[in-house]
Amino acid sequence: MTRFFLFLFCFLLFIFCSKDDPEDYAKMLAKEECNIVVEIPPTSSVWFRVEGYNPITKHQEICKTNNRWWNLYWKEIEPGDTLVKKRNELILSIHKKDTVINHNWND
Image 1 (cartoon, rainbow, N blue to C red):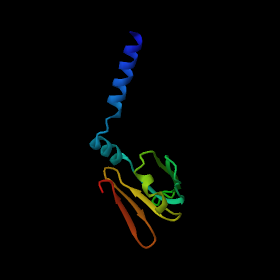
Image 2: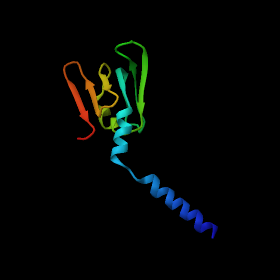
Image 3: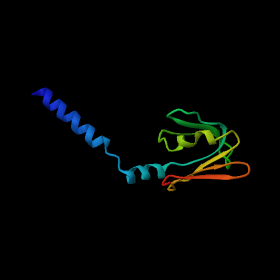
C-alpha cells in the first residue's frame, strides 16, 4: 500500500511539473536582461555564459542563463560583439561591427 501511494505521488508530481505553458515560459524569458560587450563568448554548453563588460558602465559582467533559447545562437557570438536582451522583451540582439542580428523568441 505504501508503494502505491509513493508511486501515485511520484506520478502526480511528474505530471504537474512537466506541463510546459508557453505563456509562462515567455514571461520567464522576458524577465531576463543582458547588455554586454563580449570578451569570452559562450560555448555549446547547456549553461549559456558570456563574459565581458557593460558598454555603459565599463564594469566587468557575466551574463548567464540556462534557458536554451540563447544557446541556439552561441555560434554567432564572437569577441567584440555586443549582446543585448532587454527586460520585458523577447528579442535577443547580437550587435556586430557592421550589422545587428535580432532573434525573436516567437519565430
